[in-house]
Length: 247
Image (cartoon, rainbow, N blue to C red; front, top):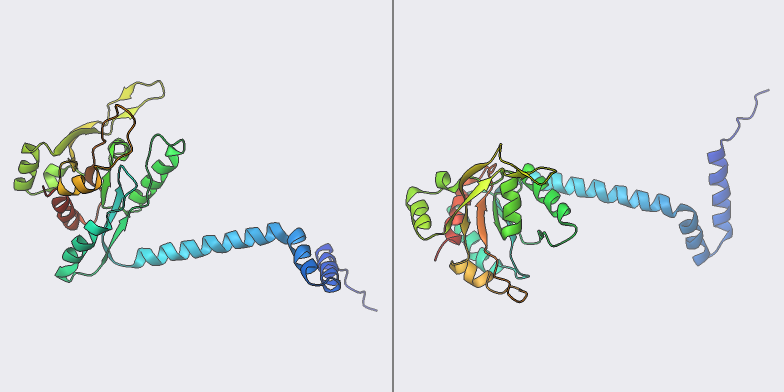
């Protein structure tokens, strides 16, 4: 005579819960499910969200893109009115690929969560999802520290580079300068060069950098245009910097 297979504790609990669920009515059923399974539901929903997000990023990463721009202004404005005609003009050559302009990336060293801003920027750059950055001093300082700024005197045309330098718009800075734990500066990887264009006194800067919330005695922060060193779209990046530098 065959012995009846012994049910596991899990099966017994499932049968018990099904029996209880059938006995309840209306809102009592929802309350029962939430009380006993809320953590499992939350974990399942979170896992589903992560899977969908990963699939979305993977799908977006497969799409051709010719230029990715990160704009962090010194105020709360958006500059779609400037970028819309630029994008239209850039894409008039018929080359494939979209132009992405991210204006929602925060970067502020006065924010106590500034290190999250640093991590997000570093992740974006390492995954090659940023070709050009338009930013204020905080983000520019960080880009210099991680050697993410391409030397503009080697990328821009000699004529444009010379013109910007004469106008004082080509910014000479030190990249790779790091601070040791004791507060001293580590200059072992420091490199000097022209890594940014000062956009403050350009048409773009006058339009989008004048309005700033300043405390008494505080000076307006400059706005910089930077080409990221690992860009795969140097030609289009130079076109953007050229357009942004227009007087």
